[in-house]
Image (cartoon, rainbow, N blue to C red; front, top):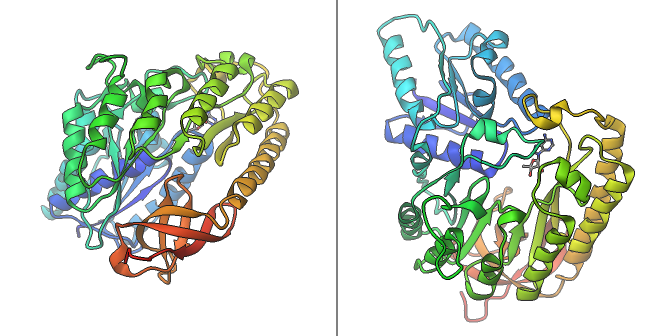
Length: 453
Ligand code: 5AD
């Protein structure tokens, strides 16, 4: 009666939160399983960033709630952003949900499940649903445990910060994730060190706005921000070979961070830098405090330090009031930045945000056309960037078997996924790969093993 399946929607932060919940549950004697049809407790860790994400999770929860008809013991929980955003209102639509747990209460999940199980074992009916979406001081420090698996884990996410104090007009995240709160630098470093001892070679530092990391808790030293100080500390951990992070904000992307790409050897030459729009008018309406020129300047500065840098971004099309001319500016900046990858979103109205109240909502057909146009620009650009890699040798970190189990997979420093044949003992090793073939998103090739294997 203690098999738990966790399904995660949304971003890497959510993935990380789910992993921490799984680790806490396992430590309490629960079994984490991979089969959603054979579990006793099913937890949906949800996303609210666009309406479609919420509808998907609500649909899934409605479908799963039917399982209770045949199996009244089955426990269904909704965790994370949508739980925070909608709270007890979820019960109006889905009265059978047992648990609704917000983003500052993930660590309470084991306790609540223990209580539910105890009540059940005592023969008590489960009665009322548990709703806990409060704020909790220090909750950022509870996303710290990692799930150990029998296979070696080569890469890991590390949460450095929770919440967001930016006020982007389109965004629900400040509501779902609360105030920005950073974890102590020493705790993060200790966590990375422990991961390295377990064989992890690559860490991705996670936060809503990592460039603001520690700004209330630490001072700049010699012009170096707390976030770059943290990168320096992770760089010095033996065993960690690669460092990534997501997401920075253009406002906090200062010269100290640009220069870190020139001097921190483990910092991978890949940056995900959300642009949202290339029109200054729209950036102002979005309450994004930078100009298109400043964005281009950061990209230029990064390319000056690392000509081989790989860039990706987030774009929203169809923000209220976006004209054809605004969109053309976005396309121009998009092309000038020469992105390898981009996540392009049609603006989605989020109740409670400033932009939801704006007149001039853009019709869906226009959003769709702009979306398609940018996707086409991206496809051409990625293809051209990928073609330039054919025949070159790239360093890959071997992560493990690919989905088919017939080959191995890993990533280049530029965050491109590669598929190749390898000996299992190479898992966790950095190995040169000769790129022989490529699709838009994946590289295929052969390891160059002279003297390595
Ligand atoms: N509609 C569409 N996209 C959004 N994003 C955030 N809020 C919205 C919204 N209301 C996008 C932004 C952000 C990414 C994670 O999701 O581009 O960077």
